[in-house]
Length: 62
Image (tube, rainbow, N blue to C red; front, side, top):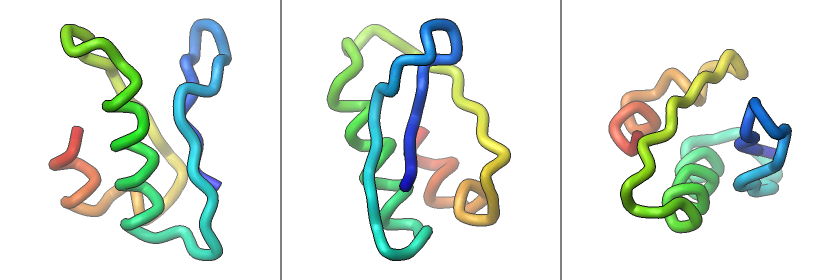
């Protein structure tokens, strides 16, 4: 499971479930977040969840 939460309210803003923690899972989660947020919002993200959050593809989509 990959989830993005609002750290102030603890609300889950986006989540995806997969059999494997891979780049596709992370990309789908971030895409879901981007589609839900207003266009003028620029979120700050933080993750210490593992190797898949260190991939160049993850960094480029944010």
